[in-house]
Every structure is written in structure tokens, then in C-alpha cells.
Image (cartoon, rainbow, N blue to C red; front, side):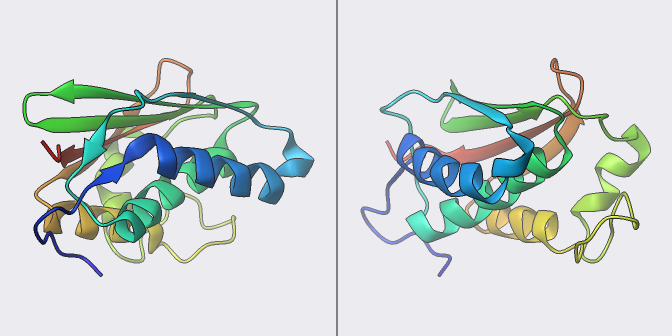
Length: 152
């Protein structure tokens, strides 16, 4: 569905809130605490279903790898909205951070998965003129930093 026709605008908070409800049910046995500090007015130039796909992959990974906490926040950076997803898991080897954005590459082969989720996030972000970067989180795990053009 990727494409940016006139008026393509998605509120980040609406996507995050809907995904939190779903992920809290999916990961209920782990009792992961999720917190959003996404500004209500932050909107990106992106179709809602594509934003949901990107954030869904990032949030699901954070819930899967986090120990007890996942936090999401948004900030304005020039003509972009930066969405940061943080978890308090064990983190990622810096040498693997860029590699796991490739199709089929996984940081841990012992855990169920296809290695496609982060590659899909990268591909969709690039279609919209954005980017995704993985790094260490202040919570101790991984920070996924998704940058997308603002809808303004």
C-alpha cells in the first residue's frame, strides 16, 4: 500500500495506541509494561496501514526481547518525525545492528522468527523517504529510531 498521495497523513499516537492494545494481549504472559510519550499531534506523511506495519514490527520485537519495559516517544527533527522504540532487554551487538535490517538476517537463530520484520520496516521507511537505525537504548536494550517525513 506504500505511496504518498495528496493528503496522506497518519497520526503516530493513534497507531501506537492501537498496537499497544494488541501487543498487551499477545504478550500478556510476560507482563511487559508499555509506555507512550508520543505527542498527540505528531503526524507523518505515510499511509496508516504502512505506519502500523512498521511500528507493529518494532513494538513486537521490543516486547519479545524486552525484560519488563517498552517505551515509545516521538520528536520533531526538522521536516521529520522521529519515533523511538526502546526496550530493557539485553541489547544488540553493534556489529549486528545494521545487518539485522537485511532480509533473512536474525541476531538470534535460537528464537522463532523469519528475519523479515526489520527488513520490511527498512524498505517501507525508505519508500517514504525515511530511515530506521538500531542502537543501544537508555533502558539497556535496543533503541529503534524510525524517521519519517512529517505530514505538514
